[in-house]
Image (cartoon, rainbow over all chains, first blue to last red):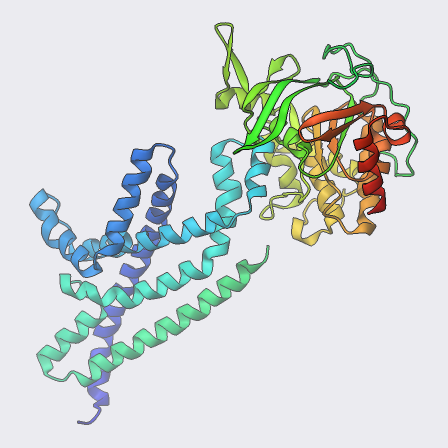
Length: 217
Length: 292
């Protein structure tokens, strides 16, 4: 088996197109995970036990079931409830929902890490609840967990090939289809692996830079 | 009950406050504050009990602080001094009894002639009268100095940003940090941070000082104490101070309360408490502090 450079050149545009879909799914899914995770965290702190306990179990359920099952559920089962989603939309929601269970834990740890004196100062200054969270607690909590949140972005990126299972035209799916048509898998799959490495390494460097930037005020 | 000869009769705003304090060597205040009769609220504790689990920290505590009076609480660790300040800041809930600030109960509301635990709205109203400076400063590290000072006035008192910033700059000048408004707390020394914290707590009319110099390096203590001496001399705030620095307590107080095991052992003007304490427990405590 020899490496065919001409063939590699021909399939590269399709693979890069797949990479674009992968990145779109990851970034949008990640934003969803960031927002939804925060919602879970705040609901879990609700003084109403029914709300906090229900949220706790929902998050636990999401975390304990495989992403692939969740993707199948959203894409194949939701239509029976009258909610039909396109593959990419279903994929973004699946990734976002699944990872929100993890980001929720990260926020929780970040909030727990804000010193008690900060909470007491907000009482002493008589700040309204909204300002306590938006101006004091969350900015400090999020800053502490930037590295962990960043690592989940990379983990999510590496989980994105699972979207292939619900027909999202992401990078690995593109490579698989090319291989199936030409019966030559070496180049497309290798290039996909390399592209994953490149994007992951670049992301890691960016995350580390972010980490350093947020290490001090 | 401790002797009541030096206890003010009540919390009426008419009680004048005399301040025959020795003049400190501190720089003079940049902003002249009101002198004379205080408009600040007084404080009343009526049979206040506070327990932490089975540990009774305050036992049916009664005492009164007149408007504009400066009272220092001294006593061994665990005697309940800091708990008193934390109750006044509503950081703790009392188990029984009533605390009044001005003429209103702090953590209770009047409902059909009966006092019931206050709701958040009442607490919010009452907290506007009380400011606290903590041992560990507790400045918000994610905000610059100016924003630390304007956050409360803008979001609690509804002041415009410009108005709040103008007042904040005056206060920063007062504490000698007029040039630091854009600095972040982590860029300041402990003493400077505590000055900012003092400026931040000066909007309300009751000022609580909780061992404000104990977390500072020794060389920074004097500056902060001088600032507080200035404030005590020039302003008409009601001040409650917990400290282990007896010289400082002597300088700023109108009255000193000696606590032990959640009760007042002895009280009186600083000259009496530090000069001729009548209780053995006070003498033992002062001796132990001076020896350390």
